[in-house]
Amino acid sequence: MTNKSLSNSQRALNELRAKIFSGELSAGSDHLESELADLLEMSRTPVREAVLTLESQGLLEMRPRKGVRILPLSPDDMNEIYDVLTELESHAAERAAEAGHSTEDLSRLAQAIDDMDAAILKEDLDAWADADDRFHKELVVLGGNSRIEAIVSMMSDQVRRARSTTLFMRPLPTKSNADHRVVYQAIRDGDPELARSTHKMHRQHAKKMLVDLLQKHRLRFL
Image 1: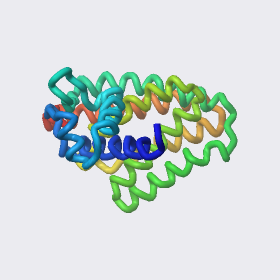
Image 2: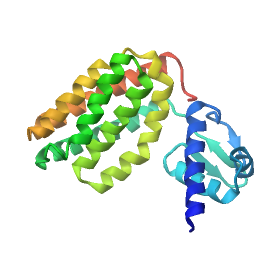
Image 3: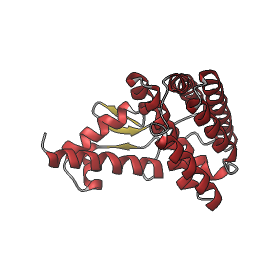
Image 4: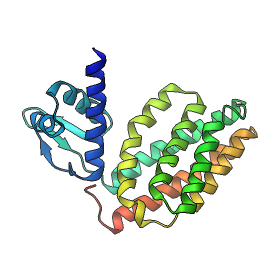
């Protein structure tokens, strides 16, 4: 595959994901690949590659002779996704604390927390969400298990999608920042039990808040 086609595939992936998150491609809607190619003003080959990736991430499904369907998320979906993420990320936090990482190794984790704090001061929830994503991604990397990385990566887009709808309905996430800092300190100090238990509690709290909001506002079709 040429660099050009790789670039087009990545652009198709980014643009389709953005349109799903924004609701331009709404949950439950059906689209032909040719329609999506016209929308993105590119050929069908990179669009098909992007669609296959997004299907593996649970954002859409390909149906024979019917094209692409954008998948909805329900509170039950998010319950299941968060249960998996909670266990895998908590295990990663525990392993990271056991690994004896240097301060330099933890610099990306620390920077994400600092960026979250700065975003809260500015009440910039979009910036906070970006830094929060970086924290969770780096935490899993520090756990050192590539299979956990792959599974978490596959589910992360679904969490982002639900959060993008509920982000401005929740209080400022100051508690989330505090939890992240405790997890960071536990990893830095080599305390696996504290790292695991704090991160598990953090994810469980986040799940309850998000699922409650989905149920309260009946936000099934995100």
